[in-house]
Image (cartoon, rainbow, N blue to C red; front, side, top):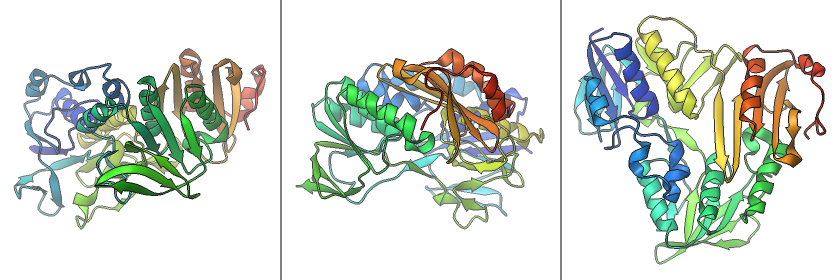
Length: 401
């Protein structure tokens, strides 16, 4: 195995490359990224970078000197266009092809859009350039409409409100962050935003964007009403960036379909947002768009490529920061899971909850309770019986509906 190619130069791809070198593999390494910028971190884009609290350079993951120490053929600003598995080659958009003995796919996701999203004033937020463009637009004092109230949408709304802007969030679900957390946590997030002056239009789908002279002017909702807008941010989720793999022979579904080792085909692995793998800890297939998973899965995929043969049985960890609130979560939160408060009380703005499913603790959530949720994480790691919580003294609000 003399040549390894990593396609995708964000957190997962960079981590995979670094893991290979740290493990002592000294062959020819190629790292391909479709953005011209060196690898950078994405979580600050919807927060500190967007508001201008941090300089763009602060998001950079490694210095140029660190990248040079990888001794890799770094192909930034070059997009992978096709994969030839029998020929063991990756074809780039510039028609160059690069041979490999083994391949790690870490191409991430692409944001979903709406018709007419090419109107001026309509933004998505995936790249650093997206964040800089949106941040510049917010400095003009516009009326902002955020379409989508998941983590990204609510973080953008919070950032815009801290800048003193008029913000409306449109969401077809009944409450924000309904997936994965359900009605009760979603209602608390809604209350948080109401308290900070965000207008929420939940339970109503977006019908279309309206514009005049090529610029967006309003968002028309499914109930026939329209919300005036100078800036619209589309936070509709994302789709795995697998278009370049069409016809390659890899199994594609909701991402690149892998086994428990993150292997998609002999000598071909996937990691990060694009990878769908069987997680043996939870006994189910999953694909995660979480920052920590990108790092952990990339390390696992690179290790397995080198022969570890260790199933990737991770416990997901993700978080969101909005205003003065930090929400942290470990595990999974399937539909039908039973939540129970095990520390604090929602009315105090400080609590932790456990989620049970099929008789096991499958997830824990902390609302401004970082120490407690880190302690509770072991329940998910150990797949503790749901009945084990019966010995925990019930706080004032022990159930969540």
